[in-house]
Length: 388
Image (cartoon, rainbow, N blue to C red; front, side, top):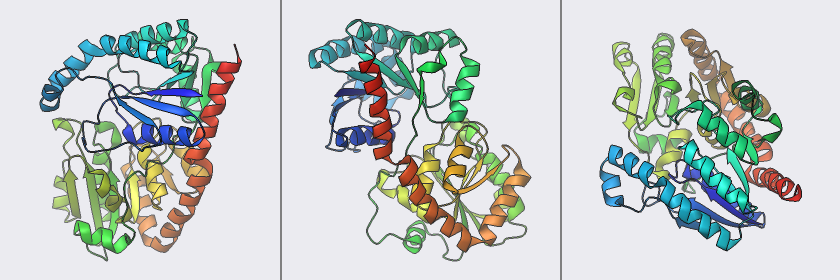
């Protein structure tokens, strides 16, 4: 089968590359269409599939220097590159186009209609049922959802929310396919708990709670900071590790309460290079995901794949993953006291928490591994093709 994976802005390269790699190893001819990952220009895709740096070549030097200009250029050139893509995919005789992100739904709907006129099946993955960035009016998204042949969501909660938000879109279009772990970095053969802490300058005897990933309001870092101040009153060994790039100036963490309560912490603000990612997971005793809202989380899968137990908010599909892997604890969203109690309990039983992470990693591979995802995704593609 000839499959094109489309993520024009390359928003989630680790997810897309893992999916492309898995489908390729499943026996398909796979091409990825997007752009060079702007956060890390050195990041390379696996050799198992064809990487096409297709979108947004126009004035790329200016794009890299100014975020607002980059967004404007991308918006203006979106249709042009979509038009070019249609011809290329028709010439290649592609069977399925799988879109990962709908940033401009009105134009994406036009693309889908053009592809379908040539008998090409189109699948769309909805990573967040409630978009976490501006996509225009809701009716444009709904039109896109009505136009594609099938929609992938990452869990039962996402399927339920989709039905409530878009009752005019046939629920039969939806297929649940897991997200998958994003453990793409090169981990040194001798990497361990101690070496990770040494590399980050964290005391060996500290009780480390890590927050990793892009910092935005909906991810609730401020909730973790408030909870840490409560935990530290009983646990002077508490150490908060924060690593990630703020989504905007307004998202820069306020650590005043950590300082006032003498809570030890380390904060690394900015994009974390791929080969350094492992340190922030492996150095931790537990990973905290105090999200206010989300459909699914790559950080959750990655934490479990790195053999680290997780404390996360009971939002979106996160409880489904915790329940199926036994990989942590869920707490009520935005409940500072509940989060503090869960952190205290996990750190008091560190040996049990460590074993919990190890066992969860095995379950992640068994239930949510990329070979499983490739098989389920292939089954979806074949169902669409055989339906004609």
